[in-house]
Length: 242
Image 1 (tube, one colour):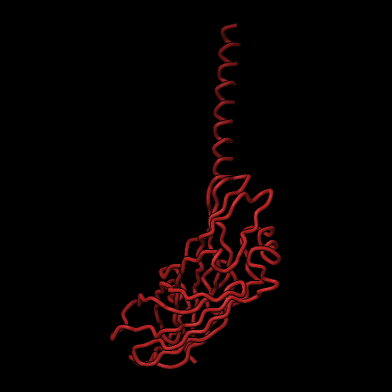
Image 2: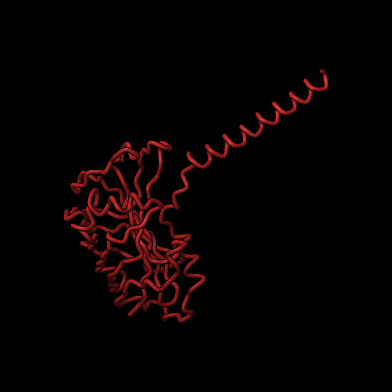
C-alpha cells in the first residue's frame, strides 16, 4: 500500500507539472503581444548595409529628385518599403493586443534642394494592408478605414525640412504636412529619421493620429471588444535618386 501511495503521489505531481507547463504555454500563446516593432532607423540601416548599391555620390550631391523604391529589401520581413497603422485593441479571446497593418504598395517622390527637403509626396494603397488577421483585414474594406471607398492615404509636405550642413550617420527632423486618410485631410507633424547610402535613402517615421479626427468609426464585433481612438501612422520608405 505504501508503494502504491508513493506511485500515486509521483503521478499526481507529474500531472500538476504537466498542467503547469500547458497552462504557461496557453498563457504565452494567447496573452503575448507579438506585434512587429515600430518603424525605427536601426532596422532600415541594416537593409541599407545589406543592399547598398555601392555607388557613392560626391559629397553634397544629395540635391535633386528621389523616388520611392520598392525593390529594396523584402516585405516578408519588413525590410522593404512599407507604410501602415498601429493601434491598441481589446479582443474577447486574449484581452489587450496591438494591431499592426502594413502594405508595401507605396509610391511617391522627394526633392532635396541645398540644405532643405522642399517637397515630399507619398501615396499609400490602403486596399492592400495586411495584418496577422485576415478577418481584421477584410473588415477594413467595408468598415473602419473603408478602404474600398477610400483606397488611398496621402502625405504632402507643406513646409521645407531643414537639413544639417553636414549629414553624418543619420538625420533627425520633423516633417510638417497634410495627411489624408478616409477622405479627410488634416495637418500633421511627423517625427522622421533618415540615412543615406550611395544613391539610396531610408526614411522612417511615425505620427500619432486620432481615428475620430478622420471620421473613422473603429470596427468592433463579437471578437473585437474595443479599439483605441489613438493610433499611429508609421512608415519605412526607401528612396532612390533619379
